[in-house]
Length: 334
Ligand code: NDP
Image (cartoon, rainbow, N blue to C red; front, side, top):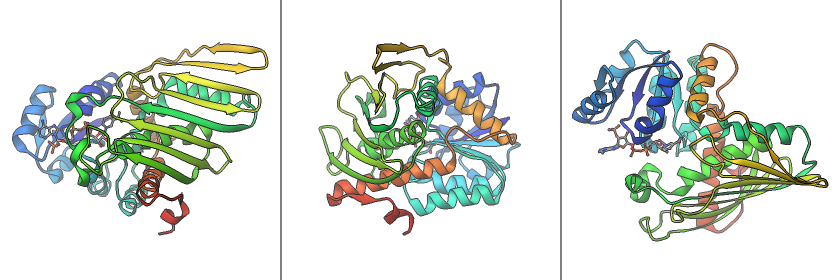
């Protein structure tokens, strides 16, 4: 397929342009809000087209757009792309405004285009294996899950994430959404309520969450906790799932690369699980998205999945700020 990039971003440079090319896609050009930056970005990534106008980009002979602007822009850009008949792979969070997120999903449906959310983690072979194990009943009845996704924020990403309130700064919009998306996929259930604590550590501007600990109740009864941070560079990410017949511990699995290991402990002892699929998460995401554009299946994470994760993030923010448990039905019926 032919693509254009909305947003001259770091993630497009470092991960998505290479992945698009590895997946056999053609990247025609890029849009930035700044014409000079668009031209420079296009030249440095070997792209023919560049523009500072969304309308112009949408008039190019493209099938799909990849949106990786700052979070507050995703909705309006996706809605314009849908109206011009382009399929949309949008970065997470799908939208920091739930009404606009719902509009994105509705407009994609109305215009018959595919909307996917780039929650790349659920595309990992390790998580596909976890879903196979959970779905196969090997762990018995699942009661508890726990995600550690506390990291150190790279120097090069210490811009709007730490100070841009209007852009959806902080770990909730950045990391909680990934954790919730992965848990929803791996546990095959939706979140019904959330209780969260948050803090501003040493990096972010006052009032912007860069430390969170969240507890989610899922519709199937599982209670899951997640922790997120920008402040701990030496932490190993992990996912644990505990059931009546076994406990699964997966280390280094909330990552951008296809790494990580799974161990299961049950009545017969402790066993390492073999994971054969170590393919690039972004390439898999793009390939699955392309198939969906051809009418085969759905993206790994759909627009509705992105909206569900954004709804949980909103619940986390309200819970932490108002110090109360938030039922997600409060947000979806609003
Ligand atoms: P960047 O800060 O690199 O890019 C966001 C926007 O900032 C760009 O669209 C660009 O605006 C502007 N910008 C970037 N660099 C400069 C610069 N040097 N000078 C001026 N403006 C600049 O953000 P990220 O790539 O980190 O994140 C973009 C989106 O991708 C976010 O929604 C984020 O949540 C998501 N993301 C997803 C990841 C994943 O693995 N799924 C990982 C990282 C981010 P313009 O286009 O107008 O030039």
